[in-house]
Length: 372
Image (cartoon, rainbow, N blue to C red; front, top):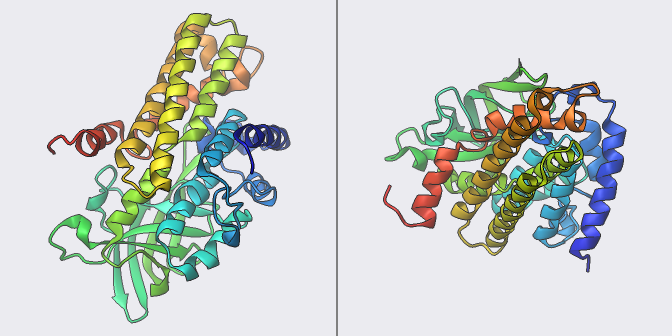
């Protein structure tokens, strides 16, 4: 049996070596936090070395380990600032959701390829009129015999420029009595006729994407979960996404950078204590998910705690070290620009993956039993 200390040590060693190997990839230099960065070389290396799907069943390409060991490894990946966007989407979020909700045939088709680092997913949820209010989505999927015909427009789609497949939230029943009751989840190949990706350059130097779907044909056997029962699948998918263990590693790395730069120790110790609390919240959420128990409130707590902690850490660095905190390159940069990257990245971290206000509402309603 693999222990926590063993997996942490092995992940630390692997991540340090891979970070050194990827250091020359210019496109990752200004990506901000690791969750913003994409590297096909890095993703393939993770698969080849057996770091994808640690807790997945062996017959699906995993290693059958405890899910908490996966969290420990992801934390070290974040600490070493690996570009993780493709991993977080394909593995942590969508791969885990496929294990929970996809048919056996679809799992056998997709998961071993993901585990090997050969298949990258992007996630088609947000739309111009449906962000935090996902039930307002307008992308339609009309059943036509043994296929769905999908048309719509997705936005802020990370990793779409390199993805092989897309995980789509679609409306299959426009006449449903309540909006969320007519939603389904499909997976489609990005090479399908009718799919167009347009890149959106970000201020930091990376890209987000729009995805346009024009009468895209998707076989019905690529439905995840039940037709018109996709809301439950989507909410469970978001539970996986919101446990951002890699961000615990990110914060701990920046705190080490701040200590090395001479920041006062008392405040750093307080922030390290908050990081430990965030780590425990993530472990609690994953334990609930693994046990098949309701985890929405716990996952929202984990996500909210890390969004707030990331911002507090960045703010502390700016306040304690002044303008140096915003330097990306050169001898004045803190932690080779990691503090500046965190400062830039936290601006969106309270929105991406579910706005902090939504997380508070989930905690209130599902964790505390408050009225809507």
